[in-house]
Length: 214
Image 1 (cartoon, rainbow, N blue to C red):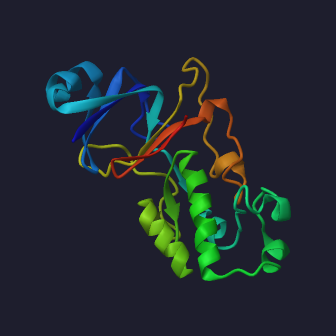
Image 2: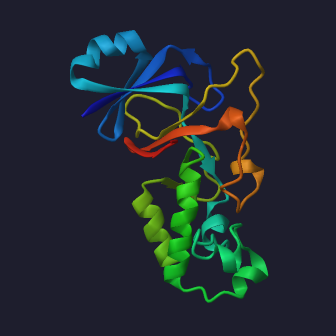
């Protein structure tokens, strides 16, 4: 089914020209078209549903520190492990003190990916060596790039895979600040707020809505 994603502003690249009043059409897992909403509605409206977002639609963000975040940092299971381990991600000696099985690493990675998706992450830098972590990443649908690859998501273009995120609409009259490389700027803390400007409203991976802010 076709879906028209209408946003206040569309940016084809993270720091690209803002396109007010534009929308993006998704057909399956691909971008079918990008253009003024009224034009896309006239062409596709009879056979498409419409999702309206009060924000800025962009390619999302890329996580270059994903290998460390998923394979060296343990993300406690909230609420079940909070009393024992706390809610913050664990690193170094704290992780070494745990009985970490491959299954437990996979469960930790799944929780971390959920938090990354909630920050508008659409791609990761790999590779991942732990089997359960690889499985979790594969099932998430997130694009995985090799080390040394692009540190930014690909531009939104017709025919490309429909990976994008919607962020709370910024004040377009103010200078646009570059987004940090990791949520909150610190690897290992995907739940750290990035500020109201960058609050993620929705994340779409391969045409699927995988996160929507309540």
